[in-house]
Length: 80
Image 1 (cartoon, rainbow, N blue to C red):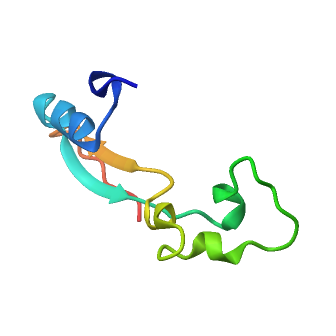
Image 2 (cartoon, rainbow, N blue to C red):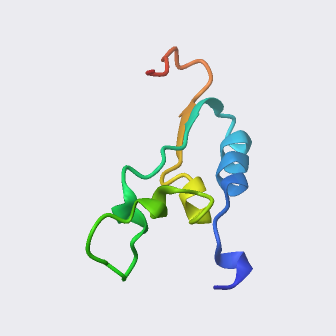
């Protein structure tokens, strides 16, 4: 994929800042279990090493990125 076609976290944050939004929370949850990282292998038995970031560096990355943004003056609050 060409670099210009990749979204980066900075793209989302800069767009929010440019729109005048306030950042309330950033959440980056990890994978729940090793099945997320199996890919096409689907080997039998537990693959617990897939959750170890030292053996599988991707395991150190968040699975989802959640940005809680708020329009200034809207009076709302962010859920915990």
